[in-house]
Length: 498
Image 1: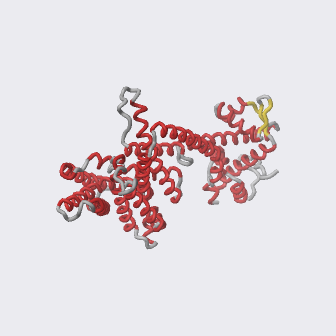
Image 2: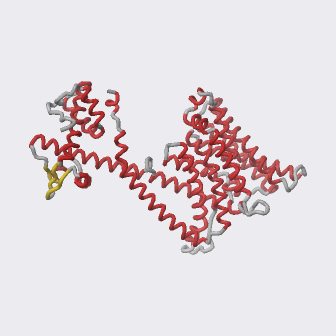
Image 3: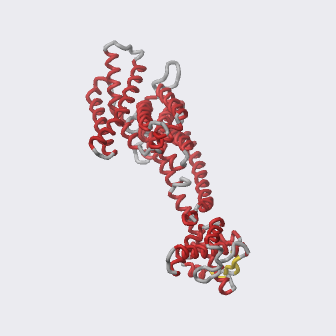
C-alpha cells in the first residue's frame, strides 16, 4: 500500500489545462501587441543598417554569454559568473598594457596590434578565470569560510586591482573607464572588418558563440552530469573538478568577447538573466539552452530599440528635447530584466499568475466535487438531491461567488441540472459523486484499520484525500480492506459501478 499511503497526485496535472490555456492566450496577445508596438517604434526611430549591426553584435555577445550561463545557473553558481565578470578585469587590463607596450617598443607592428591585443586579452582572461576559481577554493579551505564569503574576498580584491590599473594607466594608453565598465556598443560597430560593413566585434562574438555551441554539443552529456550531480559524474569517470575549471575558463573567454560590447559590469546580465528566464519556462536542459539563446537575442533587440526611442518619448514632454537616446548596453540589461519579470509572472509552471490561476481552478474543482458529494449524501438520507444556492453555500462552508462559479461549471458539464435556482444531481453527476463518496469512505476505513484514531478524527483527512484518489487507488484500497462493505461509521461504501 505504499502508493496509497503516498497518495499519487499525478491526476492534478490534467486539471491545469484551463490555467495553461489562459496563460498561452495571454502570451499570444502580448506577443501580438508587442509586435505592433515594435513595428511602430522602428518606423519612428528610422531604423537603418547601423541599428541592424548594433543589434546583431549585441545579440551575438548576449547569446555567447548565455551558453555558459546556463550551466552556471544549473550548478547554482550564478555569483561565480558575477565574480568572473569582475575578476577578469585585471587580466584584461594587464594583457592590454602588455600588448600596448610591445607595440610602443616596436616588437609588434600597428597593423597586427589589434589581433595581438585580442589574443592577449583572451589569454589574460582565461588565466585569471581559472585563477579566480582556484583562489576561491583555496580561501574557502584555508580560511575555513563559506563559499560565498571566499568568492566575495577574491572577486572584490581582483576587481579593485583592475580598477586601480585602469586609473593609473588610463592617461598613457587611452583606456576609457566608462567604456571598460559599461560598454559602448554603438561605437564598437563602427570598427569594421576591412572592405566590409561587418563589425569586428560581431566577428569575435560570433566566433565565440560558435565555439561555445560546439563545446556544448561535444560535451553535452559530461556537462549535464557534472552540473546536476558532481559525485555521480566523478564516479562515472567524468572528473567534476576538471569540468568546473573548464567551465570557468570558457566563461572567462566568453566574457572577454563581450567585454568591449557590453562592458564588464553589464555582461553579468547577459550571462545569467537569459538562463534564469529560460529556467522559469522549462526544466529540460536542451529546451533551456534554446530558450536562453532566444531570450538573449530578444534582450539585444528590445534593448537597442528602447534605447533609441524611449528617452525622447519620456523627456521631450518634460522639456528636455535634447535627450533622444541612451546607452544600448544598459537598456539590454533592462530588457533582460523585463523578460525575466514576464516569465516570473506568466511562466506556465513557475509563474506567479499561473500558480494563482491553478490554485483558483483547483479550489473551484474541489468546491464542485464537495457539492456533488453533498447532494449524493443528501439523496442517500432523504431520497432527494435538490438544494438551493444559499443552502449549498451554507452547508459547504464557502462564500457565494466561488460556489456560483463551481455550480456554473457543474451545470455546463451536465453533472447538475438547475431548475428555478434549485440544483439537482444528474445521472452523470451521480456517478462522479458515487466515486467521490466511495473514495472518502474507503480512506476512512483504511485509516481506521492501520492507525489507532478515534472515529471522529477520520473525516477531516478523508475530506481532503478523496479529491485525489483515482480509480486505480480506489481499487487498491478496496483490495487492502478485503472489500469492506461499510466505513467505520457504519455507512455503506458505494460500489465502483452501478
